[in-house]
Length: 205
Image (cartoon, rainbow, N blue to C red; front, side, top):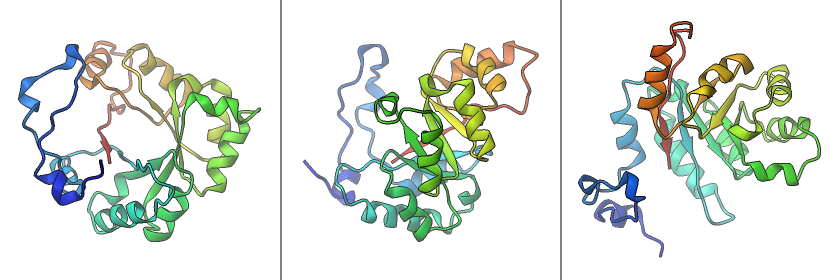
């Protein structure tokens, strides 16, 4: 069932939540708009990732709506719009040239390309500024190729504190996690970790 923005705004979130994460306080929560979310996280000093998810081949309407919301935002320099849909990247660049973009790559990309350098090539040809990789793809070779191309790498999604050290070693720009409190605690406990590192918020549209 497809709902309009207005319909979503008056609908409560009654979702099937994993028992470990179940919390009755979320049951009556309502869907926030992108504008509202950006206002809430306006304090953030780190990158803000907006993921475009679209089930139809035509992503133009979604790209146009997001571009309209972010083009005049004070947070625009921090915003990185990303998507698995390759066509969304050049569309965002056209509608909002100042926005940074990233191509999302899942592990299944290994079934489509034979060499890691092709991942960087695909992203560069789409005009992306960043790579957003599943953590299993973040090898030393691929991150080195991305660095040579001037493309910062973000990995998703890991809750393992061991990745903090690995990210430093690989020169990874940012790490996305479902458990920021756990990783922040691990970072603080390791005094050798650079205090400039952050666990960044993610906006998913």
